[in-house]
Length: 253
Image (tube, rainbow, N blue to C red; front, side, top):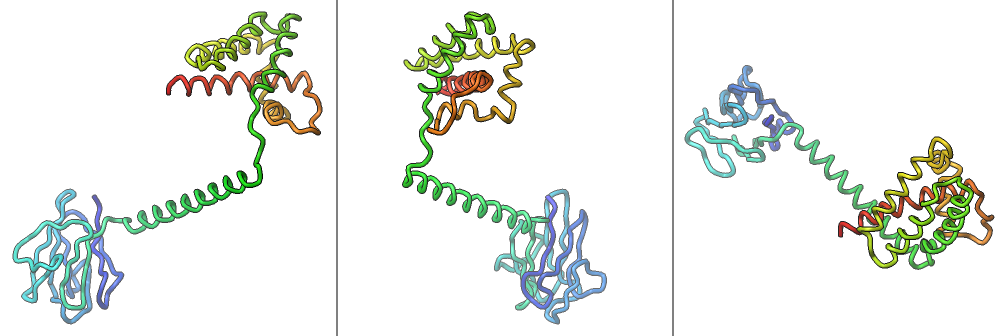
């Protein structure tokens, strides 16, 4: 653990020095790594010895050194944040290198998260008080997608079993059979993959123009036109993907 020794009180407040392995001299001496200017501090007042990640302080001055209020008479182990008083007006502190900067970044992050949380709560309250967005109507979306899938299966543009699997997967969800329905949603995903080269269904679903195809069925607006064949294809893929995700999550609970 890299630490520094920092002056927090006295004429040299703000000064600091790194503590490399070995000994670091502190005092008014020109040879001191942390050179102080207070006349109450001895030329060679304190030495800090680092061995690995451990730090040890040893008083060299007849004027004395105090660590957290106790005068030291022999070498003692130093811990981060401990206060070292060399004189009535000079106080040092052992700090983790970059610790204050890291703490400041954490404080900023926590403050930002707090503000975002408050904004989110406010948005929810406003949404609730104004009626908000209509709740997703999955029954309506299924009622629009299922007949389209049946027509596609009858015309052999989709595998014939897709209509049966879609109906059964949806039925199982209505009775809470998520462990079984997730298997059927997965089979439907695999069937979509099997016709990708011929139909390009996943490509259609990922097209920016069709990104909201399912959402338009879930929360329809009076001014929305009837969905096109391509929009229904995109909505079907999105419907299967989202129901699979939901069923897997519910099956784990």
